[in-house]
Amino acid sequence: MTEYLISNARIVNEGQQSEGDVLVRDGRIAQIGNAITAPAQARVIDAAGRVLLPGMIDSHVHCREPGLTHKADIASESRAMVAGGITSFMDMPNVQPPTTDNDALAAKQTLAEGRAMANYGFHLGATNDNIEAIKALDPQTTPGIKVFMGASTGRMLVDDEAALDAIFASAPVPVLTHCEDTPMIEAAEQQARARYGADVPMREHPNIRSRQACYASTTRAVELAQRHGTQLHVLHLTTADEMVLFEPGAMAGKQITGEACVHHLFFCDDDYAAKGTLIKCNPSIKTAADRDALRKAMASGRIDIIGTDNAPHLLAEKDNSYFDAPAGLPLVQYALVAMLEHVTAGHLTLEQLAAKCAHNPAQRFGVVERGYIREGYWADLVLVDVDRPTGAANDQVLAKCGWTPFAGHVFGSSIAATFVSGQLAYHEGEVNPRCMGRALRYNH
Image 1 (cartoon, rainbow, N blue to C red):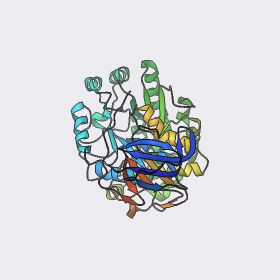
Image 2: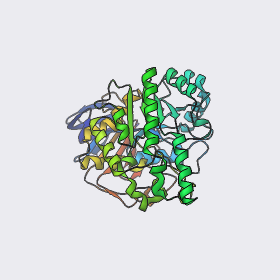
Image 3: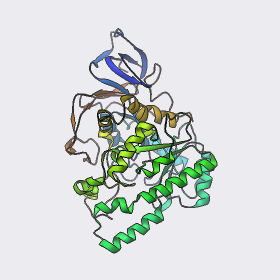
Image 4: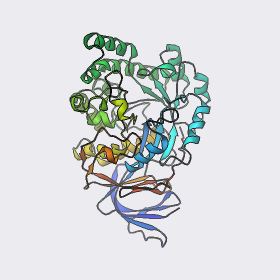
């Protein structure tokens, strides 16, 4: 394994900034200091004028494998991830067949071995009848249990009250919830069909996938967690209303935590006119006021973690009427540069960005020896050029779907280099196809 010296970097880590060097050896951070002498065999990367961050840990992605690989797969999505500064990911269970038992978890681990360019982990999916599989999972190899409390169909929708109680009472790892109230959504869909027929305009999406449906379901999840003492992480929050359910401040010691996603922090309902079904996602993108509330919640600590909910579909699938266009966006390649826009705009600091994209997901899921720039930890690092813009374009997308909702936008910064477990996965526009991620391990 190649040895690297990253010199003259502005290191952002654990609430501080410092100028210094980082020596990477045998996949790990061997030394952090000033004026480190480069070993004879080391490759030197001059980081002068650039920012070194811990690599982003995206705890919320959909790689679509197995069963939906015409849209994406572990190899294609992880290639886009490393180009975007994401060094580790945790994949969701709503694939075909769904990841709802230990055999399915093991099968996904096998699929990732030797193919994932980023480090990888897989959440177990809850159903109305798999409580024994939940109790039997290995906390050292499984980050969390995904519970669809709405917005899913078939076996992945958990709508039985007794099953929800059992899951929240018995979960040996954090419970992650998708919170939307299905009966409210179905009633709103019927009203929209009655008014518009099959040709429902996209501007109705936040009315159908409404703020009330989000608030009711999130309130229910928080109540369940409080009753059972469950470690709860609520995914992709979208409304100002929900923010009152989460405590501000540092994440350490919190039982209940919240996530916001890159697209909900970037777009608002004004963008449906231009973007249409390209930004159709569940939960829906809502008002500018909601977006502003999410941005303020990042700064206050009510939002603890930033994820992507990367959920690719082909453009041909998106190019449909409202009810036929699937929900979900490809996001990983431009996620970190999109978040750096919030630093430029003053919505959060670089130190807060490092916490919400790396430190906090590592802490929330007990990721072993990752998420920080510390001697002895795995060298998962991203070098950012804050003065070199990145133009988002469909023909630059490395994911299989070949498009981005950010197309045409110019971000103010760019990813100069990404290290995954000490390997130079991406450097100056080039992906290293020999880079292979490792299975994440957890200490819950």
